[in-house]
Image 1: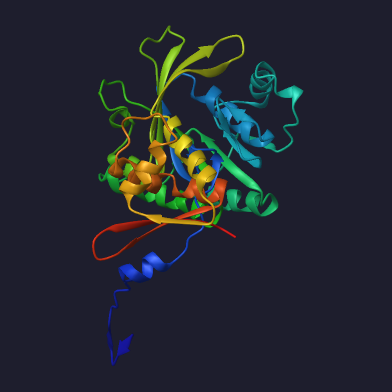
Image 2: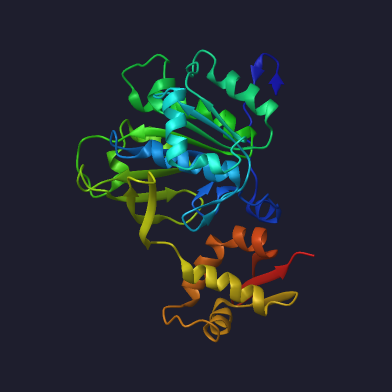
Length: 332
């Protein structure tokens, strides 16, 4: 807004009631529950098995199959294998028995421009030709970082992540950046990721793959996503099949899935009541002593997108003079 020669800077806001009245499209997933659409980092030490996991993710999405117990959404896949050549990639796909499946939706590249001189144009061009792309993996992040670096590493990290957000902001897909961890111990795996906190702060989630011993085939995968629940998987790498498999799950909420199933079972058209009343309703169907009104409310918020996308049940909240009201309503 101009007032003479003076430009008035206007702050755009939205009030809480207007925001709560708006409806947004549910979060999409490349792999159900563990890999939503957005920008992510897959980090680990060199030669820990990140590329094998990346290729397994690519194959699952390209074929619409499962990885572990999680269903992938079938779509086109673009895999930047920037530390490999086509001969090695063919050998790896053969070890993964990919030739027994139709992997025509998997597209592989062993060279690309950097972030500052053409990578984004290359990706946009590919996506225009392949609009059904659901997953892009760049292996590794360092191969595409060719911008100027100043003394402020945080600003540089944030700048590069924001450039890549141009992709995830425009297209419904998951973009995974394979990266390295530092040679240091920290009880929080996220603190071991190489670079500044700007990397972790600018992405939608982080996957950290680590081994307790270099010679061991066992490992741990920590998943910390901004918009979904977190996971910690104990994994085992099979050198014959070159795949990671799950030994144990910590943080995979089977009980929360059961709650979704139970709500789908008892809900007719609409249900209204307090968290205490819903807790009583659920307790009659699920053998879980830890259910509380607070935990039920948190689980509903955490699984609202899954309830709507998978079961066609919309979750909303209202308030009367005395209580906060939960509303469960089937989409017609």
